[in-house]
Length: 237
Ligand code: GLN
Image (cartoon, rainbow, N blue to C red; front, side):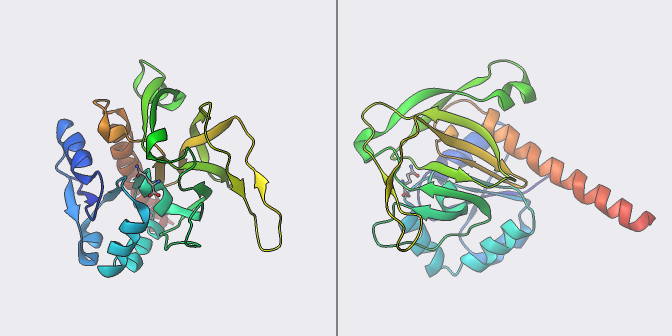
């Protein structure tokens, strides 16, 4: 049986473990770099990304996490986990924080505003209905949530969301000497997939909807099929 790890430094790791248990999977709490090679897939929960980065540094986890993502094993980041996986994060007051990277996107850490601007909304996610039939929508729980501002060409957009009325303006500076611009679009990207990486700005682990967890576990099966077919191709040639 596949071993699914949940990074358990801080944040909603217990909730992910409970969500996995509801679909019959025992998630493993991960706190040490030496645990990573034994995992088939990894969930990075929501929480507070600066604190999570400090703890990851303290436990010397960054090299092993980067290796895990680079090896093509399935990784799912929710909220702070999404920030962690992004190649670039903006909206960090202290001028940046360490990221794992691998997901070709720019994320704004607190796009929707402060904690009091947390919200829930119904999201349209056609992929969920394609996979499982039934409703193409899901409940999105956004807690001081990030949003994805830009994605690279290899990134598949799974869901976007209207920017709620009253969301404070954010300004984006795209580089030194480049003038700041107010982000003026009325929708933002909140769920993406790039190969082995799944990322959601919201928290499916705080709902009773198991479809996102099942989708993630299927990514692990897909990656085994790929490895197997690559192996059989290379041995037959
Ligand atoms: N915006 C938070 C951060 O910067 C993430 C919030 C969340 O994970 N619920 O880390």
